[in-house]
Image 1 (cartoon, rainbow, N blue to C red):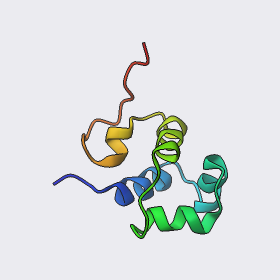
Image 2 (tube, one colour; image 1 turned 45 degrees about the vertical axis):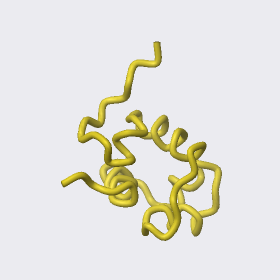
Image 3 (spheres, helix red, strand yellow; image 1 turned 120 degrees about the vertical axis):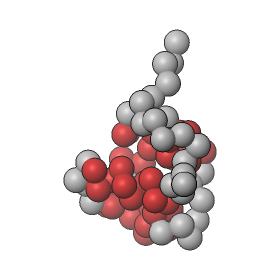
Length: 76
């Protein structure tokens, strides 16, 4: 079973030993906005999804649960 976007966001944050406010700062948003993404209350916008993938050095497909491979794609 594939994980959902909110589950992946939380998993990535916890795996990197980060606080929600630290990820929110990296995405240039308020902490309560990030919390809504992680709790599944609000979908993460494409622009922030890309920033999150770059921040965690993974692919947007991994965050979205479309793949279980966390390796980023080549940007060639």
